[in-house]
Image (cartoon, one colour):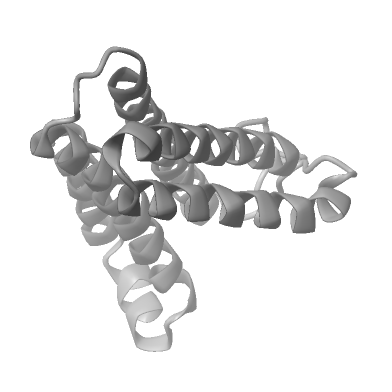
Length: 167
């Protein structure tokens, strides 16, 4: 039900390549001396953030659906959870870009707790809810249990998102 942009398929390979370049810049930035590496990490983080924002715009995740769902009790919570998960992805990327930028421009290195918060936004706020929601849709036995006990999935995903937010 997403209203994706018509040029999504054309841009997808380029966006994937740019994401890989951003990731490589961050990895190489951590391996180099701090005075040069921080600039590569900042460039990589900025590139990843830009790619994620363009991709989200192209897929239309935060736009209204093309039509009402035929099964709103399944579609609507899933849409809310997926949007929340991708909001955590953007938040984690923004936080990491901020930390790299602060180190590059002001010289204040990120604390381990700050880097951990960025990782938790990606891991617990993005990946875990996304895996739980997708598993509830595609794994045979698990999806049958979820249909019988919908509130358990709701509680699980909400607790994952709340834990990531508290972190």
